[in-house]
Amino acid sequence: MDVSASVKDMPVRGEHPALDLVNTTFIRGGLRGQLIDVLRTPADLDEWIADHRGPLDLVEPYPALDGPDGPAALAAFLELREALRRLLRATVDGESPTAADVTAVNSAARACVDWIELPPSADGPPLRRSSSADPATVLRARVARTAVELLTGPDRALLRACPAPGCILFYLRSHPRRAWCSPACGTRVRVARHSRRHGVDPSHDR
Ligand SMILES: [Zn+2]
Image 1 (cartoon, rainbow, N blue to C red):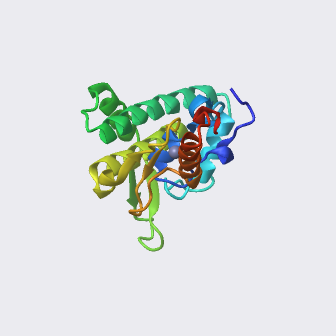
Image 2: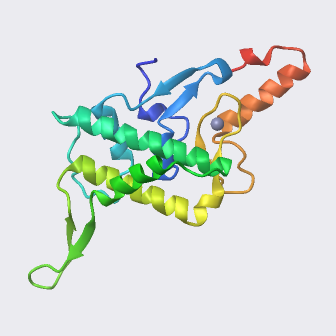
């Protein structure tokens, strides 16, 4: 595994947070490429979180997970990621999800509830409250909630798995002409088609 890959190397960033989480694993190098996972350490997860503070409504400063509890937090987060990956796959395939994966997302969503309260003066901005003080639990709950909103809302119909050979990424078909997760995948497929037409082994294309 290429240890130099970081969150910034993700081929697709800035999608829906649930997709951005699943897309932290990708294949570098096309059909015969290498599986890359950019979430290998708690520090990697902190970098991913920094990218998603806004979409996940995380109030600054969000505590770093790269501490003594970091490995456990990362492991729990990756479990959620894999459940989401299988749910996304089932959705694009038109298949029923497994009960275990639905339960994994629902448990994460339920583990932390947010609400707002009046300040003592009943004036000024509301006080934000959470049922959990554990930042990893808060984070998983926020991601799980966005996933529930995605899979139960209008964007569900836009969910796609990139059809390029050797690509494992998901995206929302945000405009009708979007046929690939990224322009790079579209280019790769066009080059491979061109190579096949000219008798070149397309698997050598990247
Ligand atoms: Zn792709």
